[in-house]
Amino acid sequence: MNILSQHNFAQADMTSMHLENVTVDFPIYNAKSRSLKNQVISLATGGTIGSNSEGHVVIRGLENISLSLKEGERLGLVGHNGSGKTTLLRVMSGVYYPSGGNISINGKCTSLINISLGIDPEATGRENIGIRGALLGFKKKELAARQAEIEDFSELGSFLDMPVRTYSTGMQLRLAFSISTVIQPEILIMDEWLATGDEGFQHKANERLHDLVNKTKILIIASHSKDLLLNNCTRIVWLEHGKVRMDADAETVANAYFGHHQ
Amino acid sequence: MASVTAQKITAWEDISSSVTNFRLAALLGWQDVAQRYRRSSIGAFWLTINMGVLIGALGLVFGTIFNSPMSEFLPFICVGLIMWGYFSSLINDGCTSFISNSDTMLQLPIPFFTYILRTWWRNTIILAHNMVIFPIVLLMFGKFVNFNALLVIPGFMLVSLNLLWVMVVLAVLCTRYRDLTQIVQNIMQVGMYVTPIMWMANNLPGGARSRLMLDLNPFYHLISIVREPLLGGTATQLNWLVTVGMAVVGWMIALLFLNRYRSRITYWL
Image (cartoon, rainbow over all chains, first blue to last red; front, side):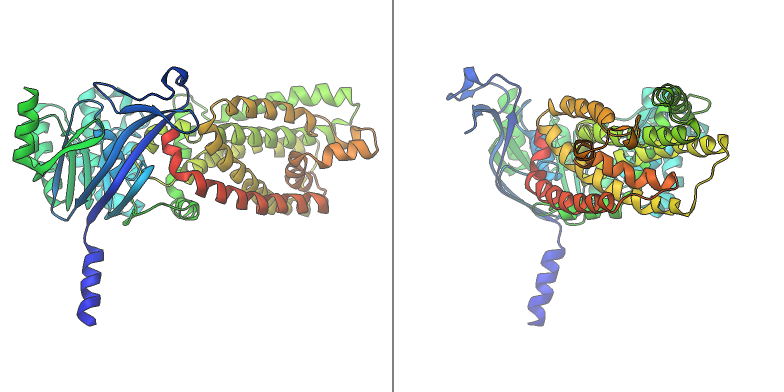
């Protein structure tokens, strides 16, 4: 009895993600549905366009995706444009609730798809740390404790008191990167490796990102780079037309996918 | 965000976690106001000046038309215009609360009511700036508020509760039906003329029809529970009953509605 309940507790405490027959349909209300009614066209890129029972155009973004991710797994996503990578990342980060099937996510999940989201160009760097930090779910105290670390890492010095619009693109990226990578998520979702500033900073940033990726319990990254995927992932899912074309260890899928495309 | 984001999030969970984390909504709402006026030297007090000029001009014109004593009419139109400005920008901005936050909504699973609270807080900050005019107008005529003014506190809370549920429903509907925003704007424009803002209820010819025109207008009740206390009077029992009733029924509808459509909202963005 005791052992059993302990076991259950441990199970519940483990970071994991389960997708069961997840289907995502996007209703498109402003497209002309007449020409598409009652026919289903499969295109070279993108999901399947069809129509639903009310006659609206529907784009099927994902179809019957079943995946189980356990703690320690590093999942790569590959597929050509419009194959459903971003949609799947959004389902996994809890933005899209699947229109069919089930998803359960156990663990604190953070997506670093666009690290500049929420940055206000008229506000100072320091103010932006507060805004972006709050968006990422930091409590005021937690953020205050990390403030100095973020400021140091960004190497922006006295520019932190200047409006962000006065920053160069590289400086803006540094700021966004410094704030966004102090998070300690259990599940980390990324769309490509984060690009950052000049060479000196790049090295430091890569180190930090590697550190973050290594600490996170589950990593999900979509990428078009074979090296990146092979270096960071243990498993790769190849999406095509919103369906899983291949789901296996990183090496096998990478060879099949990149071999197939080159 | 949440440690367990499993399964569907109910409307109740959404709203309670938004309220618990009000700091985020307040920060974003404050940012909205600050952003607009950051490069201006007197900042958001431009709003106060604009409103003051409007009150002065309309007060003189309509006060003269209705032959009302200025010492009575100007404070009346002052509170009326400021509160109407608050109502209409809350409702109009409420329609686009989700649409204007679509970038964030498509990336971070922040509870949706946060965006409604952001809109509410932004407009409440603007309201606070505008309210500065009211004591100035009172002083001009050597008037003061009396103890009834304390009733403005429950009045304001009721007004906010009512507007917030309307905003929830409209935000969902307007995300799905984009034309609705225009219709709502239209209604709010007309609403300003059918509600006693620029005219006083006693300017109406007496009789059942005038009474009905007032009592069937929800905005009349909403504005009364904040305006009357500030002008030294009290709102009628009917005003309070209607606003309490609307808040209770409205929130029940809004919760059911949000619960039903919450998971579809991001698909409509």
